[in-house]
Image (cartoon, rainbow, N blue to C red; front, top):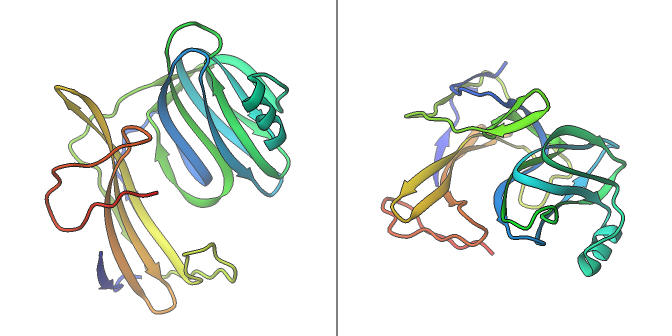
Length: 243
């Protein structure tokens, strides 16, 4: 981490990206790719605020049961493998918005339709929070969602800040009242003789708008699976295993 004075403070952002499915993101977002054996399920917990709902995009190699549940419904499903849901559909792709009242919900992908392994790529967002542009490697053709791969030698982001102010009297834990940030993130596919890896390359400028200073953060996350480690990394910095 390096500290630098913020000299350049309307925001003009140029993001070089070729995208079939790129959209503004505002909210608590979750995205992942997972392979499920028959009768297994993937779930995530997400909070809906301001009486909005969830925007969901997913693609699976075979049909799965996609469900949205309340905590009580999910607890019953987790114990019995069945039960009611706020929303449920069997599909191999989905692209849409589900309106929901405020509260905590569980999004579930259940491989109970076929007797084979299924690979699921999903993107779930609850609004509002941070603002940005994202490309998750999914494109919509008619009513079908299809995955695709971007091939590029570099991804570049340029920002010029002439004026910036931020204040939150009740910020989340670990967030400064006057804090703001600019990020450029890319998930890099690494193909080796033993298999493929997904590395999340993260570049962050943390800005403190009350004193015009900034911290630069460069991170490499191993996003290959739920338990992934990095080995034989060279350069400045350190390797940490997050809880």
